Image (cartoon, rainbow, N blue to C red; front, side):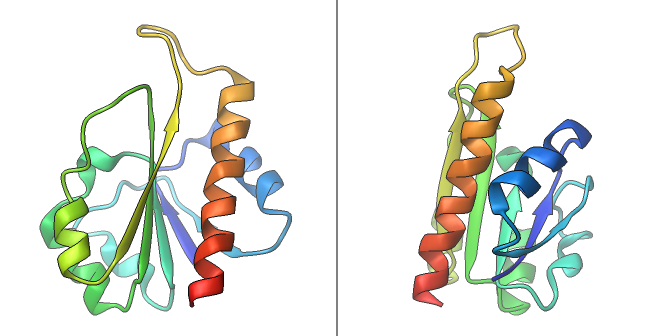
Amino acid sequence: MKVIAYGIRPSEKGLLAQANHKKHEITLISNPLSAETAFYAQGKEAVIVFAPSGVSGHALKVLAALGIRFIATRFDGPGPGSPGKGTAARLGILWANVTVPSTPGQAPSLEDLQRAAAQTIRQLDDWQLLA
């Protein structure tokens, strides 16, 4: 599956690549997802967003127009709700949340980040069966 990951932190690039085991073709960028950066998803099937608060309805419309069928969001702690989840559903984009448990005021542990990376790749594996 061809995937782009937005807003990925430098410290997490290796974790996601390691969890992926070269199964999916993932482009990793540090830019957050926005209506202005959504065009990077051209030619991809899925999007990973490492900051769901940045998933606007306008960005989702651009992604849908580009043919994106799947979006996985990743955030630390309980986080906010998924503001774009309803819009994504109306646009025919399947949405999944990957939550990294963390203690308020503390960064997630390496083990927590590894689990989140593995969970993200499992979600892509599941979606690949639907594609």
